[in-house]
Structures are given as structure tokens and as C-alpha cells.
Length: 202
Image (cartoon, rainbow, N blue to C red; front, top):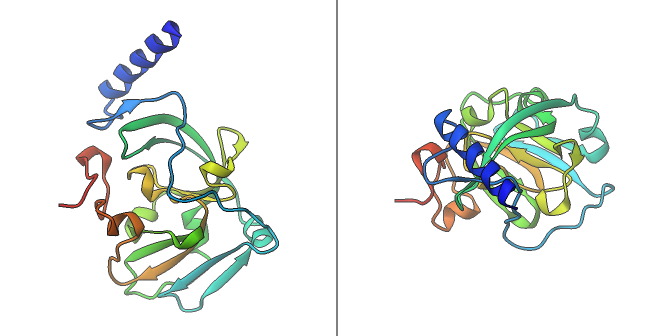
């Protein structure tokens, strides 16, 4: 245990010196589980994924159809608003940009409301999703996501606090304005930059 503690402290110093550990955060070698509500049950026969809102034609994908999309691997850091960070996570899934190619956005689209199980939502500017390391993950560190970490599908947005990396994601709604999601309606910051400590709304 002492060796593990020293290893963690050394790694934390390295990440802070490299500019990868945001202020107010501590490194963890584990992956804590945090979410609101219960873990939803996954039924592949009923699961679907929607792209709607400011698109020329709304799209619905079944689980089978979603899994036919090209797979990619991304390695990135993960920062929770509760002040822990986990580094060099290996994610496998479908890039946001590959999903975006399935629909034609209307010119006025500039924000996205992410929809998940049980009515959960999170707001993200479109520009923050349209990056080369943002993806819908099905696997973490070589293993399928555990149910309490978002199985079967979790959105990963590495440069924002992890509440924006929505678990159990079921679709995207494209908007021409910013619209507060679940945690944003309950006092969390509308954007959530960990390096600016944007934890809560002003």
C-alpha cells in the first residue's frame, strides 16, 4: 500500500509539472463511480440512438446499426468535478465526427443537448464536440464499459469536467442556443472547464 501511495504521489507531481493536472484536482489510479439515479438496464432490441433538432432529416439508429459505424481508439485524461483526475484512459468507440457525418446540420446549429437514459441531459457547444478526441465510447482500457460507468455507450469529452461525458447516452439534439442540462439546472457551470475550475455557476 505504501508503494502504491508513493507511486500515486510521484505520478501526480509529474502530471502537475506537465500541465495536465488541473488546479484543485488530485490524481487517482482507480476509477470512482459517481452518477445520479439508478443504473439503467440495457436491452439491445429496444435501444436506439437519435440525432435530431436542427438537422435536415432526423436519424434513428438501432444498437446493431450503431455498432456498424467505424471504430476508433483515443487516449485521454478524465477530470471529475469532485476533484479527482484519472490519466491516459484508453477509449474505444465511435468518434463524434463520424456520427456527425450521418446528418446534415442546418447553418444555425451551434449547441447540442445530449440526451441519456432516465431523461438526463447535458449541454455542450457544438465546437467542443467537433474535436478529434471526442467519441462515444463502448470500451475503456480494453474492456467493455461496466454498467455503472455507462454501458453500453458513454460520451467522452476529455477537456471538460466529466459530468459532460454523459453515461448511457441515447442521442443528440442540435440547437441554435445554449440550453441548460440536468446538472446545469442544479447549479453546475454551463461550460465546465477544469483548468479554469468552472465547477459551479456564478
